[in-house]
Length: 256
Length: 284
Image 1 (cartoon, rainbow over the protein chains, first blue to last red):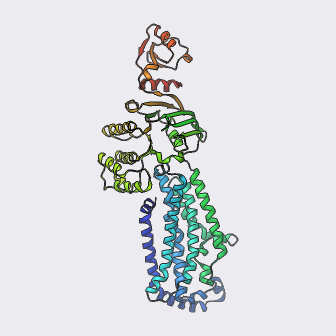
Image 2 (cartoon, each protein chain N blue to C red; image 1 turned 30 degrees about the horizontal axis):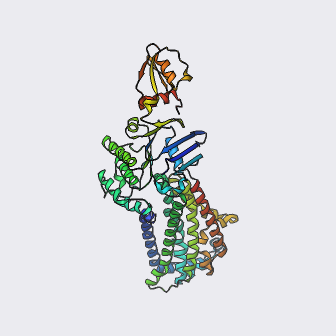
């Protein structure tokens, strides 16, 4: 199963990594200009009327961009990579089951292997690839930054990475559910995009903003306070485990 | 191997309000080609899906005396839709199957694919329908399974390839394998089946050996207008200028033979199938 699954997802994974590596290099190349631009902006913001300052909110983070560690965490983990992570998970996850149902190749597998074995193999290989891609792209941040001559440590990245791994696993279990329920590949993609776009919108409504895992995946507490959001992490992990169990039950009962 | 490889008892399967299989009993004989014959929508594919545990059903199905989950390694299946992994070449498909399946013989698969003249370096996505079917059959037949299940295996094949495939299927039973095979093409069944069952509207109308057909049943062609009590016969079908009557009762055969203008005709599979299905009568 490993050979089959990896063979099917290799092109997607290579393209995703290539695009995000380009994005990482662009982020690091922009480092001197962004820092300078933000300092200038901070100066200009100071001259704004009070009501506009209130509207814009806290701008103190702009001046922190001079710090290499802060720049990397906020612009890579907290922006370019972090924001794309759910989309990366979607692109890897949706075909794992849905393509087999859509192309009817699932008959080949399920007539020859037990459903539990098929589910476990496909789910775990997909999860493994997603966690590996997440770890590689996250850790590439400080590695490339240091190679480019900046002095960056790994402590913030590792904390952000932990949150991103749990966030990626959550999105994977959610997208797998849609993938397992579908008989074609279009619905999982459309539903996935709706979820990726819809969750930040939910986050605007304060009473249910906790439903939006983006601040967690973007490592907001790590960037702002240097701490991991353990409560959200444990809660999201629990939801992921429940969703995985539901994924399996749906797959086990699915009629062909 | 047990004499009954697959035993089905009171199998029922519904899709919403539609009852696709209506409490059938079926026994698949070991080491023989067992054919399930029926028109489209008869419930053949649903029966196969139930045997393989691909759908939920009520009733009992035992394969080699066990549940399907316990004997999956002993089964090779070719579905109605012969879709295989299109991004693979036959060479890569063989490599993949040898990694995924415990009972797969790569050299046999390669031999069969070469026999079917499949281009080993081209992706399956570029294959014609017939070539895809040949590729799927090559992979399925390269499994060292005890039971081979084929759902309309020759659909889309040209006549030469079709005969080759039928010979291969016959060869499986000659080497002691059990074959369960569905089709709606009567000449195919006549060519390779040892035992056959007729399925229609979710019911088994007949199950028995092909060679015993002519010995057990008699077909009479009577003049139109002959008064008959339909319930006394297995099937009564009106045709232009004649009434065809099928029976397996010796006394009835004698009685029918005495009717003026009655002619006894040979009972072949095509006539037998047509009469049972058109008369919608159970001859079990």
